[in-house]
Length: 203
Image 1 (tube, rainbow, N blue to C red):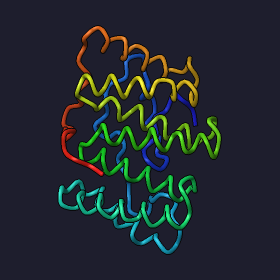
Image 2: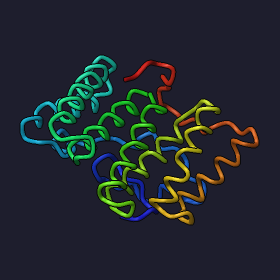
Image 3: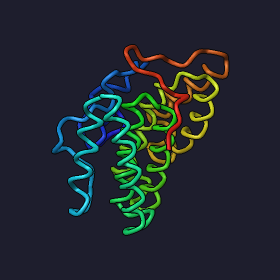
Image 4: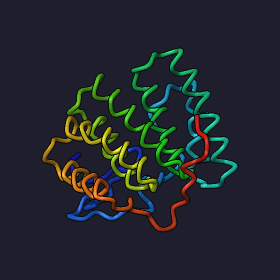
């Protein structure tokens, strides 16, 4: 994996996303099939598959079901395996994808900030898991349309990207430019065709 490629939730590459001036991608984190699921213990596998299917549908009612079931899975798997177990972190990445698909982009960024830190702490800042999670956080951050929120999340994300991807990576340089633009009063990028329900409550 390289910092020149943005990955979908569980590994499908989108080549050349981080071009000189990257544009938001409507299919940024699309999930392919129900067989493409995060790491989950056998006892939870069927439920995780249902969350993936509900999320991939894009249907608002099924997304609500996915969010509720994701929260229950998070609680149960955390209780059984602990905060930093790969099963727990993977479920939290899935919750981030649910939020992003539902248009709750700030919440999705926060989930991926959390999972990036978890992977960096347990697998190492240079691990593929931490890198992939950081790239997802950076990609989804481009979908945050509220200027103040984009600036605040970007300020939190920028040092994490430098730690995981390197301060001179294309992603980090892109973040530096975008945050400078926001400081000058520029508007965040608004991806076409993306629902923005940023004000909606999310757990």
